[in-house]
Image (cartoon, rainbow, N blue to C red; front, top):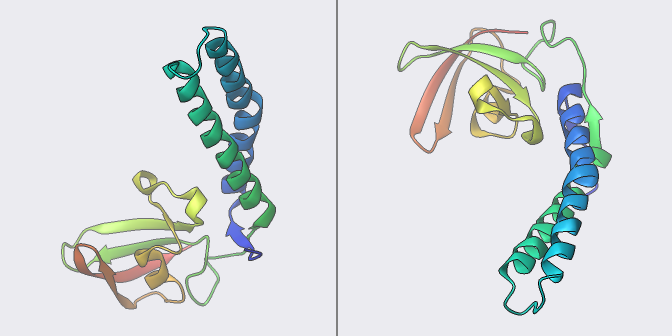
Length: 156
């Protein structure tokens, strides 16, 4: 996987903060937990030891994942409001034609997603459907709940 990953500066900062926490807080904490569990004796029947080792495996795997994401990340900045069509990083205002409800999505990388804040992945069904579209276009989006029709009102 040599492909670069477009990210916002905010997402890159979040990844770097997570990596810092994993290396400086989580890793030393689990090493201490393993040492403490070892001191309790027989490791074969030591649930604390096995849980700490499992946690250590998760932390080490997550460190590798985050380091890879950071290494392949490219901060993408451009004037999305002046673009001829919707691009990565744009905040899109649209109306759901089925419900009449207006929604707003910011298209970010998968690592920057926060659906509760309207931050969706540009690789999601909605994100893929919006990329390349312009104001006034109607987009049919296939989701697990069926087809959703959105009218693009604006983007910035």
